[in-house]
Amino acid sequence: MTLRTRLTAWYGGVFLIAGIALIGLNYWLLASFAPVDAGIAVARGIPATQLDPYSGSVTLEAAQLPADTLVVTADQVKVDTMNTVLWQSIIALLVAAVIAVWLGWVVAGRVLAPLHSITSTAHRLEAERLDQRIELDGPPDELKELADTFDGMLDRLASSFDSQKRFVANASHELRTPLAVQRTLIEVALAAPDANDDMRRLGTHLLDTNERSEKLIDGLLVLARSDRGLATRELVWLDEVIDDEIESCAALASEKKVTFAVRTRRYLVDGDPVLLAQLVGNLLRNAVLYNKPGGSVSVELDRELVVANTGPTVPAQAVPGLFEPFRRLRDRTGTAGSGLGLSIVQSVARAHQGAAKARPNGGGGLVVQVNLPETGVRQPS
Image 1: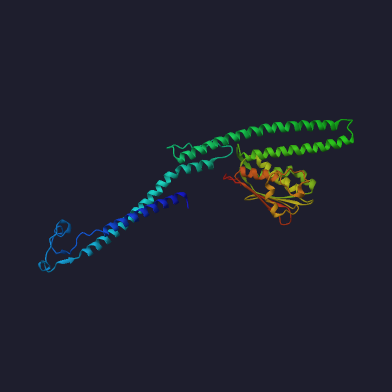
Image 2: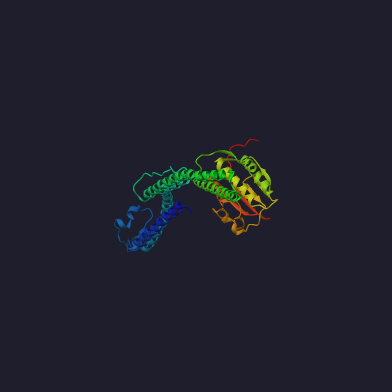
C-alpha cells in the first residue's frame, strides 16, 4: 500500500469517526427532547399549518373531534422523527464520506508531490551526473527542509566525486611512472655484458614483481574508474569485443593448452568500449588461468554473456567472495592474477546498469553470467 493510499485511508477514517460521533450526539440530544406531552390530532382535509403542535395547539375533548380524525401520541411522533433523522444522517454521512475520501486523495497527492520530485531526482543521479537538484519552491516546512538537505548532500557528493576523479588521474601518472623507470633500469642492467647469473636471476625476479605491480595498479585504476560510472557512452558490438579478446588470449590459451568453444550473436550495448573490453578480457583470462591443462572455455552470448571453464571444483559457499577485491580461492594464490578480475567484471557490469553472478560448474570450474542491457537499435540482418 502506497503512502498516498494510507494517508487517504487515514483522512477517510478520521472523517467517518467524527461523523459517527456527530450523528450520535444529535441522536442523543433529539432523544432527550419532548415536543408535547399529550396526543396530536390530525384530521383529514385540515391544512398542515393548523396541525403543527409548535404553532399553538388547542386542547379538545375526544368527543369534539371529527369521526375521521387520526390521533397520534407524542411518543410515536418522537420515534418517527428520530428514525427519520437517523437514516437521513447516515445517508448524508456516506455521501460526505465518499467526497471526503476523494478530497483526501487529491490533498495527499499535493502534499506528497515534493517527495515524488525527490525520488525522481534520485533516480536520475549517476556518478557522472550529479548536477541534478530538486530546488523545491514553497513555504519553509518539513518537506522544504528535506529537499534542501537532499540538495546539500548532492553538493557534497559532487565535490567528493570530483576530488576522487582528480586523485585517480594523478595516481595513474604518479604510480605508473616510477614503475616504468624501474622496469627500464632492470632491463638495462640485465642487458649489460658483465651481468652474471645471480644478477640475471635477481633481475628476472624483479621484472616479474614489477609486472605484477603494474597489473595490480592497472586493475585498481580500472576498478576505480568503473565504480565512478560512465563519463561517455557509445554503441558497442559486444560480439566483436568478444572476438577481439579471444584473439588476444590465444597465446595464453595455447600455453595452457586450453580451447575455446564460442557461440555468439549480434549484440549491441550502449556503453564504454574500453571498460567492456576489460570486462570480457578479465572473464576470458580468468577462465584460462584457472583452468586445467587440456581444458576448455565455453563462451555464449545470447540474452546474456556466459563464460564457463573446466577448472578445479569451486565450493558453492566460496563463490560470492570471488567478487570481492583481492579475494581468491586458496589454490589460486599461486597464479599470476591479482584478485581483482571478477571485482572489475561486477563493477563494469553495474556501471552499464547490468549485473554479474557466478555459480560452480557441474564438472568443475566456474560459470560466470553477465547481464548487460541490449539497446533497442535495430540490428543488421
